[in-house]
Image 1 (cartoon, rainbow, N blue to C red):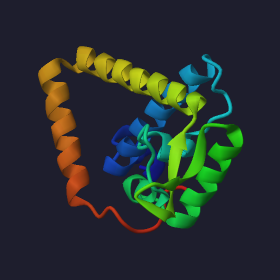
Image 2 (spheres, rainbow, N blue to C red):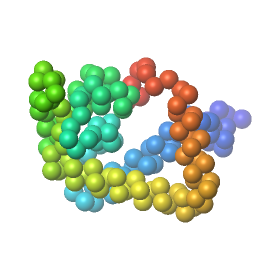
Image 3 (cartoon, rainbow, N blue to C red):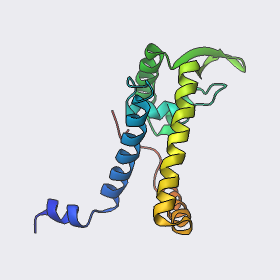
Image 4 (tube, rainbow, N blue to C red):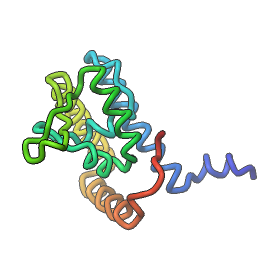
Amino acid sequence: MKRSTLKEQDPDLGILAVQLSARVQREIFRRSAEHGFDDLRPRHGAVLAYLDEEGTRPGELARLAGRNKQTMGAILDELERLGYVRRAPDPADRRAKLIIPTDRGRTFMELSDGLVHLIEQKLSDTLGPDLYRDFRTALGRGVAILPATGHDTEG
């Protein structure tokens, strides 16, 4: 049997993880586009998924998203140009910068949080609440035992 056929019929963990991530992202960005956020791309989620309303340092965003600082800088430049974030001095350390969401950024963050909740509710309804809770727990434990550092998964 061809490897591709085998992987299609019995996908391994890597394939399932990528498929789940891609499908969740497609749903979020498809539905976000319907609300006027058609300029965002999945790579922007590396910032917008972790950004605090009061601001977050770029290095912390890179760490949380598992991206290197150069990649994070490029994503931040794009989001600033698109009007979703702004850079400001960190009041705790004037040499450091904070990435702060604009009104448009906060609106997207609220929308995407709601969309993630709807996706999770759909999965819970489909799998049943107990199985979904166990799935999330197992997934979180699996993620926790694998290295969080290394090469970016997206350039």
